[in-house]
Length: 195
Image (cartoon, rainbow, N blue to C red; front, side):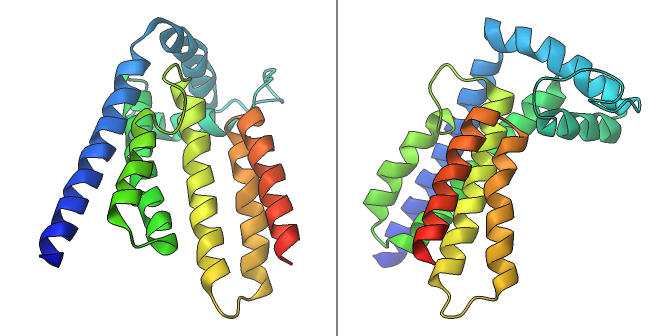
């Protein structure tokens, strides 16, 4: 019986992850994200051909997403529309799995975990999301939270691992400043309160 419940839990998690990736894919084909892709693609392409943001061209946003897209262009041999779609769908799928890993460290109640994971059908964002930025920032946040929970549950943690936790708290700022700053401030407050 216990094994059957565990199998059902895994199947539901997989389905939620697939639905999250599909939601991001469907949202990516709406008007506003398609407009965003034009300048995201241009910036990533300029980086792909060797230009550097802030040196060769002006950039008001953090370059995290553009670097990832440029690397993906390098791997694919140039631009293709599937590149940002694959990136965002893969990240949104991973967000569900990483969140599951974090929740399993906090509770053993499968129903609670499944209910909480259903919030991630929209990759943890509003239904009207800016897929590249929001999904990348959310992925970085989930990795940071999972690392923090892992450290918190260890009986003795070396200082360098806490330092890394502080560094990971800043990573979302590389993708989207407003999400990143809010998360970084919250995480630094939490880390400070626990010390």
